[in-house]
Amino acid sequence: MKNLFQRTRPFKLFLFCGAISFFLHSCSKKDVIKLSLPEYIGGAQVKPGDICGSVKGVFLSDSVYNITCDIVVNRGDTLIIQPGAKIYMKGNYAFWIKGNLLSLGTKTKPVFFTVQGLAKKDVIGQDPTTDPAYTGKWGGIQGDTSCQLMIIKYTHIEFAGGKIGIGQVAGVANGATVAPVRYNNVNGIFIIEDSWMYGQIDGGASLNIVAGKFHIMRNSFEKGGFSGGENIQVGNGCQGNIAYNLFVGCATNAIRIGNGNGLLAQVNAVCYNNTFVNGGYRRYVYGGAGNSDGRGASVGFEKAGRGLVYNNLFVNNRLGLRIVKTFSYSGNNLTIADTANIRYGNNLSYGDAPEITSQFYPDNCLAIPQPTDIPLPSSFLPAGYTAGTPYNGASLVGLNNPRFINYPLPMNYGTGTVSSLLATMAFVGDYDFHLQPSSPCNGRGTTNFTISNAVTKVDLNYGASEISVPGTDIGCYQSNGRGLQH
Image (cartoon, rainbow, N blue to C red):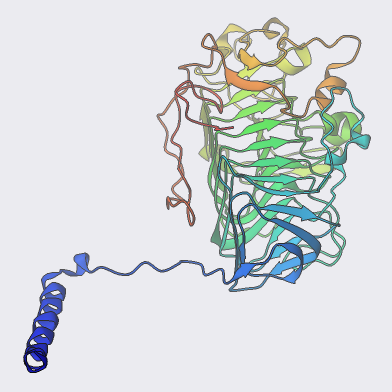
């Protein structure tokens, strides 16, 4: 038997090699099979408990990590955060991302970046100076110019955006007030989807995309800024989509689109199927009326900003679509938006007071009423209306109620003022912003526009989970179950 095996072994080896050779040569170049390797190697598992200093590897699912000093992900390294991980900030520390960050929560097991034991104070009429959401308890997540990929999925980011100590990435100075999340790589990709951003101190934006390609879909933004700051700010040639997001109670503009002083390329943002509620009032009430002149919009374009705005729902915002022209107010010099390359329509505006409805098309701005707008512009604007001129919107108060499942519309202002009440109604809480079947938003959206292709990769880990196409219902929730998922 031994001799037989020795005699047949060379023949078997010949057959094996021949089979492999046949397989390889029979494949065309398109058919060559390559083993799939991890795109970003995170390294070893990171033991739960106290964490400080340079970090790479994997934060484990359902584990607790206590941050006891600034965290740095070095250039070329990757930090991967698994579903259900809880990251508790034990002081005013920041995550400095020079490498890559992937926070990969799921619908049933979200990731949390928060302050342990710090309760939310979501009370109508509460003095914002006593609300921890506006105090900036930690320094947020700060991306450097070397961060190739920052992906945030099903992640809660709470009480962030404070004053940092020593800035450790490009563009962040020592002692600066920082954004809860900042991205700044012109050649990189930023993705945030199905996540929650809660709270921000003044300065910048809750989400500041300084440079890069972006995908911002199906998120909730609450309490963005005490008396200043936006929910989302994009500039310096940033390209991407902002869709199916819920914005409640930002201090200034919910979305601000405009290039900075150091122009790299022209910014372009496609904003569709978003819902904006009670935006622009805290800057007016707590920052001073003069300080808020010309600011406080749902979507604002300036400094050569361009993009699309379709299928959005504007409810009780201080200003509607804001397209800036060149002018000065209260010592602020504004540069005109790229009006030739901004397109918009099929947006619904609702207001509970004349000062709101008379700013659906803001004074001294360049938003041109569209025949697809709701309410129909020709039904209330004077003949020969010119964009930016004042008009009387009193007849529109209470019309086109979007009919949320659970939210008090029309609003009862009682003995207070419109601005003072809406400045504190800056949270989701137990409200439900889904639309009733009788909502005037249903079926009034359009799909006749092209979204950005800046981010096209679909992958559960290394790309967008889903690139949600435009919906036929106005707003972030769709009657077919698509859109915002929380």
